[in-house]
Amino acid sequence: MWLLVGFACLLAPVPGAVQTPFAPTGAYAGHWGVDLAAEMGTAVRAPVGGTVSFAGSVAGMLTVTIVSGEMKVSVSYLSSVGVSRGDEVQAGEVVGQSGVAHGGDALHLSVRLHGQYVDPAPFLACRFGPISDALRLVPYPDRSANRIAGRNL
Image (cartoon, rainbow, N blue to C red):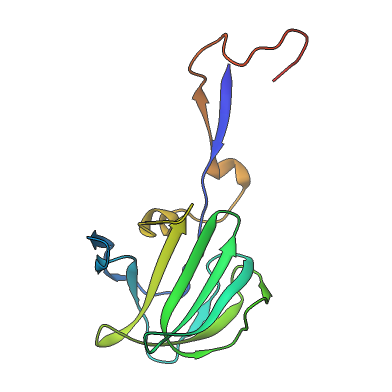
């Protein structure tokens, strides 16, 4: 028996490379996302389609957060915001303009899955294409598990 397992992909919100990697430390210290190189004023695109749950200032920095299922994706250190809370956005839609992150021209991207911050880099490493490119077959752990007579899985 085989299970079909997929993974999520994010569009890069800006075309720049990762400048500062994910490096969380402690409850409030560390770097809970990645910084992507982006000249000030670069169009920032929604990494994922979903509902804008926040669009405004957090600790003096403009941020947009998009919720898609159990995933929350935030882009921060914006110079302007082009969406409002409650807006539905498509992946790739412009949500704002980049600003300055940590003293340099960059954009901060963070991802939360089920409320926990995770490294966004693996989600950016995949590319959109045929769904078959994002799916993998893995062996089912036990042939007799979850079997109900007369029912196909």
